Image (spheres, rainbow, N blue to C red):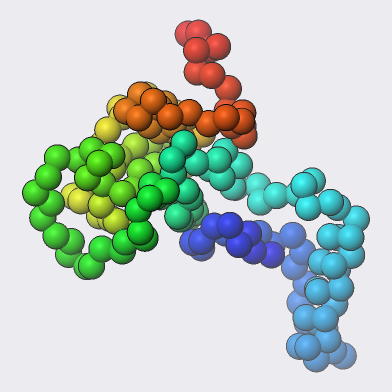
Length: 182
């Protein structure tokens, strides 16, 4: 089963595994799997199931941004939010030297990266999709081991601070960081 909201090798889960039996063809085995999946989906409303590795808060971008890419791997997760008014841009291999200061006015993308296991994260501005580390400029200093959900929250706060724009509706899976105390 695949989660089509994300890409990367970790966007699939394998809820059932079964070898092809000697008495059946490959197409019969695939049909068996499809029948099982359809039966499962008929028993569960779409709002009641999700990919266990996908962070739901990702799908609520900061005010003035759209989700352009959510890359999910075993160790690394990368989220690219593109400004509403910017065209989708993909950089070329090797990148270009950027001659302007990184601001929301000069960079179309807000990038959030997190590494599973360590929980370390990065919030940066980038000129294009799939920007290399040297093409990004960090704009927020997330705490150590904050993980993806907190890094996304910090990215939203950065946008709010820089633009004054906020979302009208509550954000999925996010509480105000101010409610927590050490």
